[in-house]
Length: 136
Image (cartoon, rainbow, N blue to C red; front, side, top):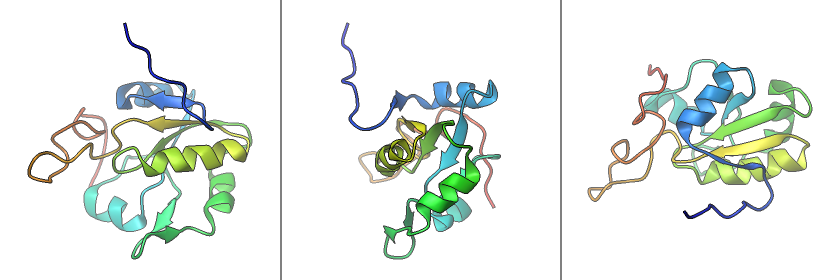
């Protein structure tokens, strides 16, 4: 049996299904760190706190990330962080940990990895696993 290496600077990585289970059980708050544009155009998870890690266009760092996260989540809360593919949410989880949260990255993100044609949504991700989301 292989084990995942312990991540550096944050609490850990969770598959989307486990993250959703924790949210449903009240064990964690879901924080969507994608841009406003991504949530509007691609879809969003009902009830998730929207705190962009980077801003569109240009993908510049969100200078209000810390303040927005503190406004969305009580001090010391357990957070599960979601981005497009599970990369930005690692960076956001590290920052949330520095701010005093127990922060977990959601593996695969909202859309999963790109397939051989460069399209997302067919290789893992929140939507791929049939978890709740809305669009429009």
